[in-house]
Length: 178
Image (cartoon, rainbow, N blue to C red; front, side):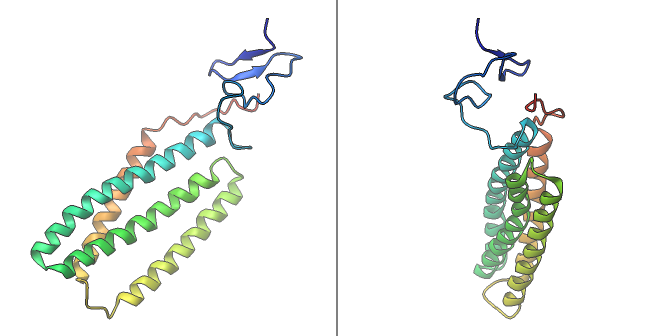
């Protein structure tokens, strides 16, 4: 007879009166990777889904940026390429930052999470405003290509994050506190 039992989700938990395995993380024994303190199943699943969303968005934006840059080059030349690439960089950085902040704070106190998300949003708006202010008189990029890059980049990023998060398996009930 062992001093631990398994939950229906495959987690190893101490049996009644037992102490469990020394160094156990609650997920498969001493060799299993440690979970972050205070983050249950739902928080860990959300964190993984948000990281996957950022990776998927970066890949989708990379492909779309190449296509848009080639089209912009054929229509306008090098200023079109620079405008498209800057637009994609701005849109990906703007949207991916929210997902990364969400991944970092997943499973935390909702007030703290809201503070980080709103604070990061404010910083992003200021940074985008400064970037656009600095670019207003520059002539090395095409403003139409910049606009197209921002719009297509936003659509790609939002769609990729939507697909990654809607296909994620995030539990509704957290059983890690048992």
